[in-house]
Image 1 (cartoon, rainbow, N blue to C red):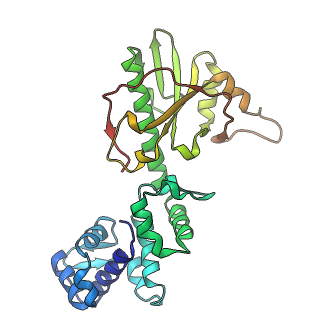
Image 2: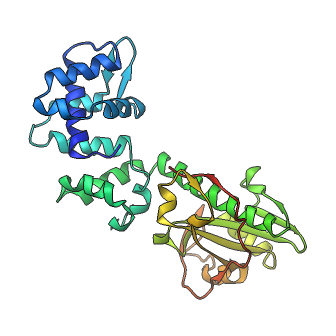
Length: 300
């Protein structure tokens, strides 16, 4: 749910009438909001916001409609900031699919926000970037980890499909365990152990490497390699992914990885993982073609 001015106003109406008296059904709830609202309520879309509030648990429907404590608290906020506060809550409760791509600890990159949705948010200026970063920080725990895994899994599936399309014998070992230190094992015609990382165009060349992955890299320097799948920005808002949503694929061998990692010393040692921002030189383009018919559900 994109918190346009109209959506924020609709949510305010719906939350207010739910607090005034019991609303026994979704339709009763919407009718009450139209009745109690100003003349603008008659021309405001209340159906979609009502559904979205229920979907993102800002409201529940049992014997009557009940709004969440967070939303109820906002109704007592100063009227001058009420709609903006509601917009902020919506961003957190129902974050846009592009939020992890457009926002990072470094700031907001509006290139990754679809034009129509960006235009709908411009009423929040000059605080829009700050509000997006607040929402991003709120969801960078479990939700962000879930999204990162979803993106990583998609990258693995594209590489598995590419290898099988080339006629290679492949085992997707990451489906069984993370303990291998790599995601894909190629047995024929020559052994390979492939660790797949996936990202968007903004973080191309960056990745997290676990201690276990680095140990496997050191143990199998002739077989282990890292492959990074870079998805286009469009991949993060589509319902189905295909090869058109892969911007590029690059790979780096074990020797290059090992050369980038400092050795353990008295003052430095590995913990669970390290974040690498690599130079361009060690990367080589992926040589195998993708399966032109391969598709999987999108991140959206």
